[in-house]
Length: 231
Image (cartoon, rainbow, N blue to C red; front, side, top):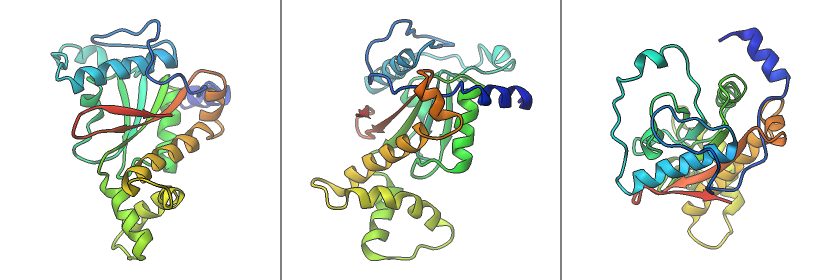
Protein backbone atom coordinates (compact mmCIF):
# COMPACT_ATOMS: atom_id res chain seq x y z
CA UNK A 1 0.00 0.00 0.00
CA UNK A 2 1.22 3.50 -0.80
CA UNK A 3 1.23 4.89 2.74
CA UNK A 4 1.46 8.51 1.67
CA UNK A 5 -1.45 8.14 -0.74
CA UNK A 6 -3.53 6.40 1.93
CA UNK A 7 -2.90 9.15 4.47
CA UNK A 8 -3.69 11.86 1.93
CA UNK A 9 -6.89 10.10 0.90
CA UNK A 10 -7.92 9.47 4.49
CA UNK A 11 -7.24 13.07 5.42
CA UNK A 12 -9.34 14.36 2.57
CA UNK A 13 -12.43 12.75 4.05
CA UNK A 14 -13.14 10.45 1.10
CA UNK A 15 -14.73 7.85 3.30
CA UNK A 16 -18.40 7.10 3.91
CA UNK A 17 -21.94 8.26 3.04
CA UNK A 18 -25.55 8.41 4.07
CA UNK A 19 -27.05 4.94 4.27
CA UNK A 20 -28.78 4.32 0.99
CA UNK A 21 -32.29 2.91 0.51
CA UNK A 22 -32.10 -0.76 1.29
CA UNK A 23 -31.94 -3.17 -1.64
CA UNK A 24 -33.72 -1.04 -4.20
CA UNK A 25 -33.11 -0.98 -7.92
CA UNK A 26 -30.17 1.32 -8.70
CA UNK A 27 -28.96 2.81 -11.95
CA UNK A 28 -25.70 1.38 -13.19
CA UNK A 29 -26.01 -1.98 -11.42
CA UNK A 30 -24.59 -4.78 -13.51
CA UNK A 31 -24.03 -8.51 -13.32
CA UNK A 32 -21.20 -10.74 -14.44
CA UNK A 33 -17.45 -10.83 -13.91
CA UNK A 34 -15.58 -7.80 -12.60
CA UNK A 35 -18.67 -5.99 -11.44
CA UNK A 36 -18.28 -2.44 -10.18
CA UNK A 37 -20.51 0.26 -8.75
CA UNK A 38 -20.31 4.03 -8.97
CA UNK A 39 -22.69 4.76 -6.08
CA UNK A 40 -23.61 3.16 -2.76
CA UNK A 41 -27.08 2.45 -4.12
CA UNK A 42 -25.63 0.57 -7.09
CA UNK A 43 -23.34 -1.43 -4.81
CA UNK A 44 -26.27 -2.44 -2.62
CA UNK A 45 -28.19 -3.51 -5.70
CA UNK A 46 -25.30 -5.72 -6.82
CA UNK A 47 -25.35 -7.41 -3.41
CA UNK A 48 -29.12 -7.84 -3.65
CA UNK A 49 -28.96 -9.38 -7.10
CA UNK A 50 -26.18 -11.75 -6.08
CA UNK A 51 -28.01 -12.93 -2.99
CA UNK A 52 -31.21 -13.41 -4.97
CA UNK A 53 -29.35 -15.69 -7.37
CA UNK A 54 -27.71 -17.60 -4.51
CA UNK A 55 -30.93 -18.12 -2.53
CA UNK A 56 -32.69 -19.37 -5.66
CA UNK A 57 -29.85 -21.74 -6.54
CA UNK A 58 -29.04 -19.78 -9.68
CA UNK A 59 -25.41 -18.97 -8.94
CA UNK A 60 -23.36 -17.98 -11.94
CA UNK A 61 -20.92 -20.41 -13.54
CA UNK A 62 -17.56 -18.94 -12.59
CA UNK A 63 -14.17 -19.66 -14.10
CA UNK A 64 -12.02 -18.39 -11.26
CA UNK A 65 -8.82 -18.86 -13.24
CA UNK A 66 -9.89 -16.65 -16.13
CA UNK A 67 -8.82 -13.29 -14.73
CA UNK A 68 -5.98 -14.22 -12.40
CA UNK A 69 -3.53 -12.14 -14.40
CA UNK A 70 -5.75 -9.08 -14.17
CA UNK A 71 -6.39 -9.57 -10.46
CA UNK A 72 -2.65 -9.80 -9.86
CA UNK A 73 -2.40 -6.18 -11.01
CA UNK A 74 -4.62 -4.88 -8.22
CA UNK A 75 -8.09 -4.92 -6.68
CA UNK A 76 -11.15 -2.70 -6.73
CA UNK A 77 -13.94 -4.30 -4.68
CA UNK A 78 -17.31 -2.57 -4.76
CA UNK A 79 -18.39 -3.64 -1.25
CA UNK A 80 -16.92 -4.56 2.13
CA UNK A 81 -18.51 -7.20 4.33
CA UNK A 82 -18.02 -7.56 8.08
CA UNK A 83 -19.33 -11.08 8.73
CA UNK A 84 -19.20 -13.82 11.32
CA UNK A 85 -16.46 -16.44 11.09
CA UNK A 86 -19.13 -19.18 11.22
CA UNK A 87 -18.21 -21.87 8.68
CA UNK A 88 -21.74 -21.78 7.24
CA UNK A 89 -21.39 -18.11 6.31
CA UNK A 90 -19.36 -17.52 3.14
CA UNK A 91 -19.94 -13.98 1.83
CA UNK A 92 -18.50 -14.58 -1.64
CA UNK A 93 -20.97 -17.44 -2.11
CA UNK A 94 -23.90 -15.70 -0.41
CA UNK A 95 -23.59 -12.78 -2.84
CA UNK A 96 -22.54 -14.87 -5.85
CA UNK A 97 -19.38 -12.80 -6.14
CA UNK A 98 -16.17 -13.16 -8.09
CA UNK A 99 -12.72 -12.86 -6.50
CA UNK A 100 -11.86 -9.19 -6.24
CA UNK A 101 -15.44 -7.95 -5.83
CA UNK A 102 -15.82 -8.13 -2.04
CA UNK A 103 -13.47 -6.95 0.71
CA UNK A 104 -14.32 -9.33 3.57
CA UNK A 105 -13.45 -9.08 7.27
CA UNK A 106 -14.57 -11.88 9.61
CA UNK A 107 -14.63 -12.67 13.30
CA UNK A 108 -16.90 -14.73 15.53
CA UNK A 109 -19.82 -12.40 16.24
CA UNK A 110 -19.27 -9.94 13.35
CA UNK A 111 -18.28 -7.02 15.54
CA UNK A 112 -15.85 -4.25 14.69
CA UNK A 113 -12.55 -4.27 16.56
CA UNK A 114 -9.91 -1.58 16.12
CA UNK A 115 -8.11 -3.74 13.58
CA UNK A 116 -11.35 -4.48 11.72
CA UNK A 117 -12.24 -0.80 11.60
CA UNK A 118 -8.78 0.00 10.26
CA UNK A 119 -9.22 -2.67 7.58
CA UNK A 120 -12.57 -1.20 6.56
CA UNK A 121 -11.04 2.28 6.49
CA UNK A 122 -8.46 0.93 4.06
CA UNK A 123 -11.23 -0.67 2.02
CA UNK A 124 -13.05 2.64 1.70
CA UNK A 125 -10.25 5.22 1.51
CA UNK A 126 -7.81 3.26 -0.64
CA UNK A 127 -9.84 0.60 -2.46
CA UNK A 128 -12.97 2.68 -2.89
CA UNK A 129 -15.71 0.37 -1.60
CA UNK A 130 -19.13 1.98 -1.88
CA UNK A 131 -20.88 0.07 0.91
CA UNK A 132 -20.02 -1.70 4.14
CA UNK A 133 -22.45 -4.44 5.11
CA UNK A 134 -22.39 -5.74 8.68
CA UNK A 135 -23.68 -9.28 8.19
CA UNK A 136 -25.06 -11.23 11.13
CA UNK A 137 -26.66 -14.64 10.73
CA UNK A 138 -29.36 -16.82 12.24
CA UNK A 139 -28.45 -19.16 15.10
CA UNK A 140 -25.21 -17.29 15.82
CA UNK A 141 -23.22 -19.27 18.38
CA UNK A 142 -21.21 -16.27 19.56
CA UNK A 143 -24.35 -14.31 20.37
CA UNK A 144 -25.96 -17.34 22.00
CA UNK A 145 -22.89 -17.84 24.20
CA UNK A 146 -23.03 -14.17 25.19
CA UNK A 147 -26.67 -14.51 26.23
CA UNK A 148 -25.72 -17.39 28.52
CA UNK A 149 -22.88 -15.36 30.02
CA UNK A 150 -25.16 -12.39 30.62
CA UNK A 151 -27.88 -14.54 32.18
CA UNK A 152 -25.69 -16.83 34.31
CA UNK A 153 -22.47 -14.93 34.86
CA UNK A 154 -20.54 -17.96 33.58
CA UNK A 155 -16.81 -17.37 33.10
CA UNK A 156 -15.53 -18.64 29.77
CA UNK A 157 -11.97 -19.97 29.29
CA UNK A 158 -9.12 -18.57 27.25
CA UNK A 159 -9.73 -15.48 25.17
CA UNK A 160 -13.44 -16.18 24.68
CA UNK A 161 -14.43 -13.30 27.01
CA UNK A 162 -13.09 -10.94 24.34
CA UNK A 163 -15.98 -12.11 22.17
CA UNK A 164 -18.71 -12.07 24.78
CA UNK A 165 -17.61 -8.72 26.24
CA UNK A 166 -17.92 -7.14 22.79
CA UNK A 167 -21.39 -8.59 22.18
CA UNK A 168 -22.79 -8.02 25.70
CA UNK A 169 -24.09 -4.47 25.00
CA UNK A 170 -26.19 -5.83 22.13
CA UNK A 171 -27.73 -8.49 24.37
CA UNK A 172 -28.42 -6.05 27.20
CA UNK A 173 -30.11 -3.63 24.81
CA UNK A 174 -32.84 -6.15 23.94
CA UNK A 175 -32.93 -8.30 27.07
CA UNK A 176 -36.40 -7.13 28.03
CA UNK A 177 -37.82 -6.86 24.52
CA UNK A 178 -40.62 -9.11 23.34
CA UNK A 179 -39.88 -11.94 20.94
CA UNK A 180 -37.02 -14.41 20.66
CA UNK A 181 -34.01 -13.17 22.62
CA UNK A 182 -31.43 -14.77 20.33
CA UNK A 183 -32.97 -13.33 17.16
CA UNK A 184 -33.33 -9.92 18.80
CA UNK A 185 -29.77 -9.96 20.06
CA UNK A 186 -28.37 -10.97 16.65
CA UNK A 187 -30.14 -8.00 15.05
CA UNK A 188 -29.13 -5.72 17.91
CA UNK A 189 -25.49 -6.71 17.50
CA UNK A 190 -25.63 -5.87 13.80
CA UNK A 191 -27.25 -2.50 14.46
CA UNK A 192 -24.72 -1.54 17.14
CA UNK A 193 -21.85 -2.24 14.78
CA UNK A 194 -23.51 -0.33 11.96
CA UNK A 195 -23.79 2.61 14.34
CA UNK A 196 -20.17 2.28 15.43
CA UNK A 197 -18.78 2.11 11.90
CA UNK A 198 -20.97 4.82 10.40
CA UNK A 199 -19.89 7.26 13.14
CA UNK A 200 -16.22 6.27 13.16
CA UNK A 201 -13.88 9.22 12.67
CA UNK A 202 -11.78 10.32 10.93
CA UNK A 203 -12.45 8.26 7.78
CA UNK A 204 -15.76 6.38 7.71
CA UNK A 205 -18.09 8.96 9.26
CA UNK A 206 -17.14 11.77 6.84
CA UNK A 207 -17.61 9.43 3.89
CA UNK A 208 -21.09 8.51 5.15
CA UNK A 209 -21.92 12.18 5.60
CA UNK A 210 -20.63 13.03 2.12
CA UNK A 211 -22.66 10.31 0.39
CA UNK A 212 -19.64 8.31 -0.74
CA UNK A 213 -20.33 5.29 1.48
CA UNK A 214 -23.32 3.47 2.92
CA UNK A 215 -23.00 1.43 6.10
CA UNK A 216 -25.88 -1.03 6.36
CA UNK A 217 -26.76 -4.17 8.30
CA UNK A 218 -28.33 -7.49 7.46
CA UNK A 219 -28.95 -10.97 8.81
CA UNK A 220 -28.22 -14.05 6.72
CA UNK A 221 -30.81 -16.79 7.12
CA UNK A 222 -28.87 -20.05 7.05
CA UNK A 223 -31.90 -22.20 6.26
CA UNK A 224 -33.09 -20.17 3.26
CA UNK A 225 -29.93 -18.49 2.02
CA UNK A 226 -31.59 -15.08 2.09
CA UNK A 227 -30.08 -11.92 3.52
CA UNK A 228 -32.66 -9.75 5.29
CA UNK A 229 -31.58 -6.13 5.57
CA UNK A 230 -32.27 -4.28 8.79
CA UNK A 231 -33.81 -0.83 8.77
